[in-house]
Amino acid sequence: MSEIILGIESSCDDTSAAVLQDRVLLSNVIASQQVHKDYGGVVPELASRAHELNIVPVVSEALNRAGVKPSELSAIAFTRGPGLLGSLLVGTSFAKALSISLNCPMVEVNHLQGHVLAGFVRQKDVPVREPEFPFLCLLVSGGNSQIVKVNDPLHFEILGQTIDDAVGEAFDKCSKMMGLGYPGGPVIDRLAKLGNPERFKFAKPRVPGLDYSFSGIKTSLLYFVRDEMAVDPGFMENNKEDICASFQKALIDILMDKLVKAAKQTGINRIAIGGGVSANSGLRNRITEEGRRRGWETFLPEFKFTTDNAAMIAIAGHFHYLAGERCPLDAAPYSRAADSLIR
View 1 (cartoon, rainbow, N blue to C red):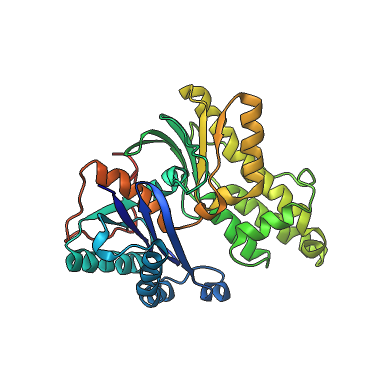
View 2 (cartoon, rainbow, N blue to C red):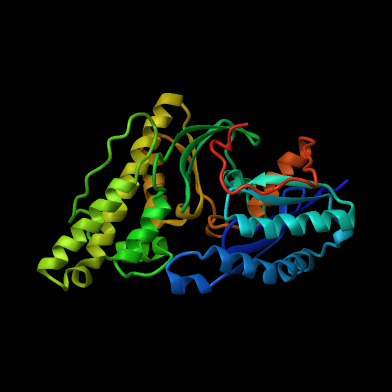
């Protein structure tokens, strides 16, 4: 019998719904929220209100595009956390209501697990290429920077993670400070392509083990730009391409140094990346280059699966559903979960 999973994602500022049939993606609809650009970051209250407006038409459109009737669903997979609590409440409440009305089981999904498994979404007429287990995943986003050992679809081990800011957070905060706009990652990535990454040097953090730290380099950039502009008010405008290129290179160096160390320690040469920052062209090129040089088998997600989307929630839900896991109706969303990927 065919298995059809509806995925619902509402952890931050994107409302998304997707339909998978036997792991093949039939639809993936995303409603993005533009209102946050005026504030230089996501405003939680505005995000949750937008989810309330978007979730019904987004889910309806996903089912229509997939050609699937609600009664044909095998399970409803939804993001329980981590994320913005108000936004998660909208998705969780909708999933519960739909589950009751259809008498269809729910499956809870950890948002970060979805990012790790995004590469397992299959598409019609697209060759299947996914890593064998175990593999290492560099999970990088606005709220998380982790090196994860993926033993199987449901059992992860966090080898290292940020002790302060995430790399995506560093991109966004520094972009805002420099007046480049929000979200900062795409802006800095675009400008970095035009600049000299060797012109400016930033000190790297010295953190033991495989953990990361990005607060120091963020502060270093802010003071550097401030001091230079005190002497030359036009410094930022005249040198923004080189600043962005040098800053982006420094962030990627930090990420890659620990990833290389993790690969050596574990002896695993299957390397994947996931999360919003995995769309960064500099990081994607560097992963590919290091893989070629070190004999890694590298796996880069398609750009449409890097940002928050329901296809990744549906594929994670697929594995939970096959394992016989079901979510009770009294489950509450969670905004934070320390080491939540470890099962």
